[in-house]
Length: 330
Image (cartoon, rainbow, N blue to C red; front, side, top):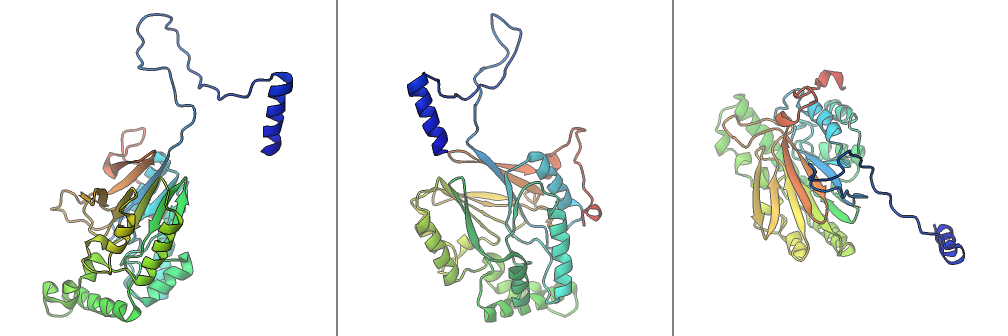
């Protein structure tokens, strides 16, 4: 590059050459005078933005053919990369053979994406210490960050408990599921699991907070910061949630996404966008009008332009949803 710059400079000085200029896009027509049916003939020479997508929950009773169809739709939309907010497998087991089968199924379908995919764990993916270790052995870190085009992405683990507490939650959950299934007597609403705050809003360790604190200190001047997590850590009212990070983020623009609730909602919090995503194949409450399958598309220019796309409205050239059957993908 230095050699090229030197050559261009000498060319300009010695030979009076003109520096290369960006070529305008070709635009031809046969209207020579009068009004035109277009608003402008000035086109963007080079796009400086990029687009990424987010998928939401698959589980809690995954419905067939939804995620495979979403993969096909994402390939049509062609984002630069795809992110997740967790609950990618049913999980809830210590059987590593079953875990391998479930992750092979998910990753087999995901392998059909034409762009990079970023894993993130939810409560179904990280239910117990065995599942946590399985996830780490397969995908590496449970929480991490990356920077793309001066935009910072924080990928949080909302199931970040000490092992003892994780087992307490796991065992209480297993008992609650037996109550729901009618295998043992009791009321789900009276169960220990139902009363646990972690069931709804998760938890984040001090170690994870310290990690992201260092990340934010390292990247103080990025264009934007995105936080993705499974459970809404920001609903905590103690130091186990997002409030410590929010204090560090208060002077920079950021956006938060989470899943888990299986119902789309949007709110402003501290002047920022906090968005709970719907599902991408996960179970739904038929009485909830905001429980729908979707993919989220974000075009990142000077600030994010967020578009929520219901999968039922992403049609192919025939005007139909091109259903991709799971059996063909793994």
